[in-house]
Length: 435
Image (cartoon, rainbow, N blue to C red; front, side, top):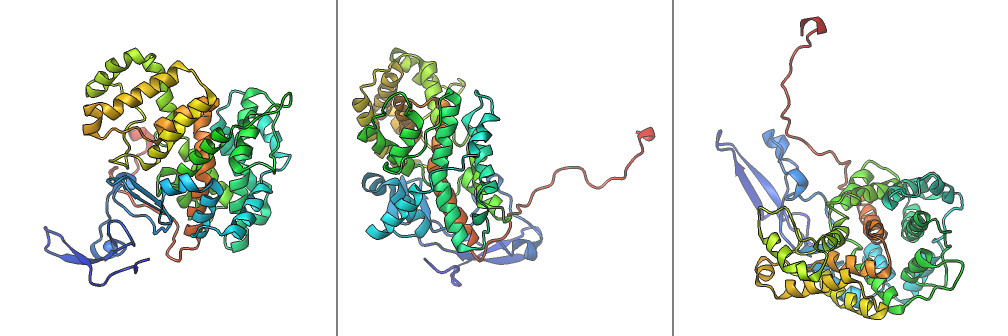
């Protein structure tokens, strides 16, 4: 990593009304843009910075994930996401994010074994599910039961104990798929499936979601690998809304289970975790592939409220590198399952048009990861209400890694954003009789 500050790099700001100047240091990372260190700005000028949404503000130092949206680059600990998705499995990527390096064979075996043997949850947790209506959104259930884990696992809530942090991290990675599958089964009125130690992480999740006591469930290797890739591609994505929520909650000293529950609540917001569900809703609105030209024309019209979901990305101004991986996987899954769904055929037609149409090319509206993941999950048999839950299962690894990094950062302080106050100035109270 580069040094925190380069004494040769500074920026001088001048107050044009008074002529006063202040010199601020510049911090450079190992890759990416430099940042202006404004920590002393208020003390020297009496002013704060104003940045709604924090789009131009670095809130922390992190060595986990790097994104270059203009070039379509996503790195985890320096490794391109394409290489990880095509060569590693999800737990290998999880180990990388947590530890900083890829595991050797012995480390991988120990980590896999630890996660596998933490997948069962306390039997009393099943009682929590009975308190929810059967039509409760599975994300509502996840917010409740994940937060409740702290009531069951008291031996891993001391955030200052490295061993307890490690145990809590592994427990979360292991148990959230089980809780997610239970939420799905509860919505169907079907019995919960216990995890199986002879299955991989992705296989186990599919088994817990789709197996029934009346017959054996056969797991397709292609579908299991696709599930694993979806988990890898959603594992971490820098300082997004849910990750920032986990860090902000963690900065207060909250236990890890509460922090991850906060991240799940943030992810539930449709502007964050609901994009692949929006893709399916859009396809339903289009209805038939013959209607695509009409809807593409509507998307071009700025006055028309219709929007094409699943194309382009707020961060990536080039092709989403995760979408490149999932595009091939998507076609493999559809071929393997032999799915003949008019909605999925419509999606493939829309994809073909987007990759060839000059409007899409000029605007760089390439299909993104949400476009393909939504299609794959529908083909697997998941309802749209489960899409964000699957996102949470994958992103738990990133949240846990970010939380661990934050706890061990000596610069970390409790989060306390400032504000630009625009309300009334001080005024005297007037009694009710005189108002």
